[in-house]
Image 1: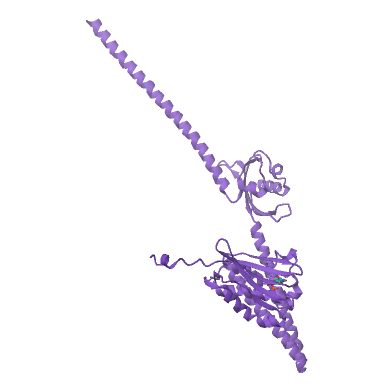
Image 2 (image 1 turned 30 degrees about the horizontal axis):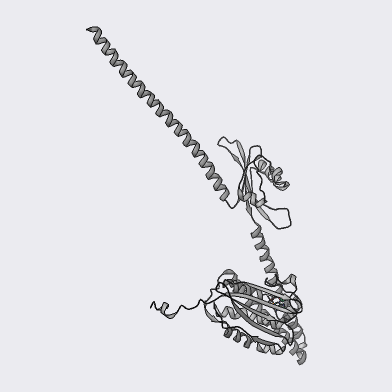
Length: 400
Ligand code: ADP
């Protein structure tokens, strides 16, 4: 009896033991799977973080260069490679090996000594003017040990160009203002010194003063127009404008000027309607026709015409049969203060801003300007404007 009972107990304990072992094994298996999952997750997280970092670095506008503690390149982002025109792998190379720029190599050394260098500007070697600004610093860990160096590069080229344009503009404006002003001052002084006592001389001098005062006035008006156009302060009052009648008005205004040179003004503009600011467009026509008369030949002709282009655009032209514009000046005549013949333009009362104003106004309307010219044969200035969309048929408009 006791024997049987003992056997039953042992069997029960053994069963329990095997069940526990099986359960333990399955638990152990679960743990291992969990650990494996966690490891995979961690790995994935690391890969994701790296990929995210890469995306982040490559989406930066600034060029980024990370050097390890031995000053070898650890990472160079896409903008950095673009700035320096590099396509090859840079990892593991020194700055000098990768870029062959002693100035930058010197900078890396300086950063090691000073800890950081901010706003270091330098020009990339080469024909084109490419300027960069670098901010650089050593990277240290929490124990204060140096881990590497970070360099951030900003492209300054556009900023430098704007700076130069601004400086040139100020220099040009000062020069343009000073010329008529010093003439006025000189003639006023001569008059005060006694020339006023000779009526003939006095009248001649006063006419010169009057002409130069007008020139100053014109220049200031043009400068204000350019400044308003460039700052975007000038709002366009867009309306349907019938081009033939607008051109006819401008030609009528300039008739006396054309008559003085015996120039015929011809308007062959077909029936075109643009969406434009009538006052600004008047200025475009006036500047182009004024130039065509001014720089065209005596006894010649000036023609205004145009046509429809594809894509809802109109092209207008102003043509003269004057001496034309040399090929090397064609791209430049729309620049502020650019003149083919400085003395001639000034003698004719030009401010050097007319075509620049034309370009700004046309661009503000979403159009383009260009000039075609052949020496000895004449010049044709073209500009485009958006066409007034055709009216839908009446039944569509009323919804009938
Ligand atoms: P400006 O006040 O000197 O006329 P613009 O900007 O109107 O200034 O023109 C720039 C230069 O382009 C002029 O100085 C002139 O040399 C040249 N130019 C403009 N229109 C013509 C033309 N129809 N024929 C020849 N040269 C022209």
